[in-house]
Image (tube, rainbow, N blue to C red; front, side):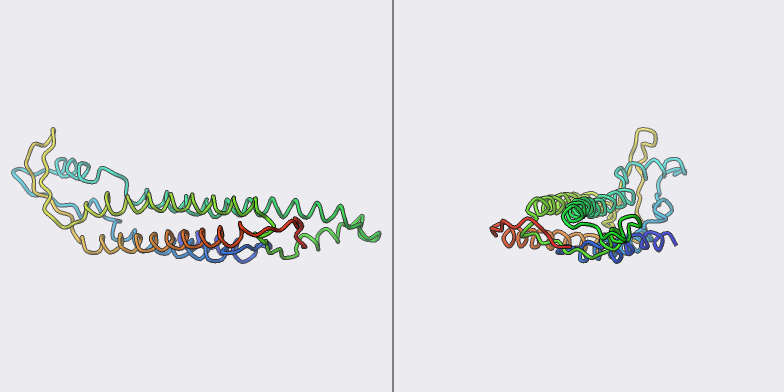
Length: 241
């Protein structure tokens, strides 16, 4: 239910927006797929404390939990969710820029085109004008293109940090190898292991695969946008709406 609740605003924003630009649907598609992958990947990690077992001389629950805290000393699921929020924020940031541009274009268009007399008081013309679809042309909107590339760079930074956490922090924790634990409060030593490591590794591989896809698409799309739009010289600064 929580996943469906999270999908609704993303899909609504992607479908109902009146302003479109190159790659918009693709990024919202990644946001939806990432949310589904998060839901599937969190399930094997839902009982992580119960999946951590230890054996040793006089093993007690307190020492097992102490070994658990020593082994899982970095956030896992909460870090995944934080990186997803960062990804969605980078997408919505572009929506903020396009919304502001659309507002400015509407103001300029309304100043140039006189309102019909019968619609001056009712505001019908302004309402109809506001609901027209607008497709942004990066050839003409260079500032917006730079902001768009900046959003892609932020997205790449977030995804590379996420990949580092997945492969260098989380993956070694569920390698399936024996964990020898010894803490100050519980010198032990205790032999511990994490149950169902294959399922947990599979969830990490899924998230890493999607993250690599986002990185590759972001790099290709960023280079394409920069090479295709930036060299173009176009003095026309108006966009018809």
